[in-house]
Amino acid sequence: MKIYVILDNIRSAYNVGSIFRTADGAGDCEILLCGISPTPEHIKVFKTALGSTNSVPWKYFKTTQEAVQFIKDKKVPLYSIELTDRAKVYHQLTFPQDLAIVLGHETEGVNRHILEQSNEHIFVPMNGKKESLNVATVAGIVIYEIVKNKK
Image (cartoon, rainbow, N blue to C red):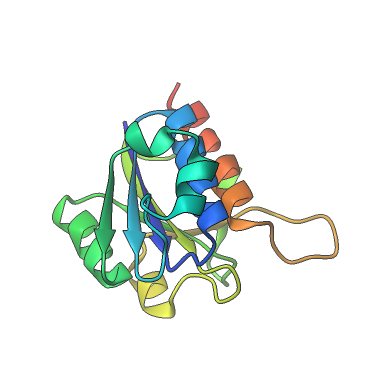
């Protein structure tokens, strides 16, 4: 099992660092940083990740489209985490052995061109007044559901 975690222009270094820690805890993850997403050289990513930038493989792509093409070349299905008309609740799916998840910009979400290329759209349902959770929190919820689903 391999989970590719594509960060589509995540602006917060703290979110990126937190996602690295989650990926380390889950195991068998690789992070694909795209566009404005800070890389592990950024001091805030480094501090928040608490060393997980050394244990989780990562690559940087100038654009998210380049990362998506990298995934498509591997014939790995692409799941965008975004609330859309076709989105399914994350815990009601059976996930393939290898997959990529896309997490979008904190306020803009996943780029619409990336959504169009995605095999599935998934979301975490909300019971409160807000429409969404913090991107690092969503990453943790979905990544651990995928791992649980594989056992």
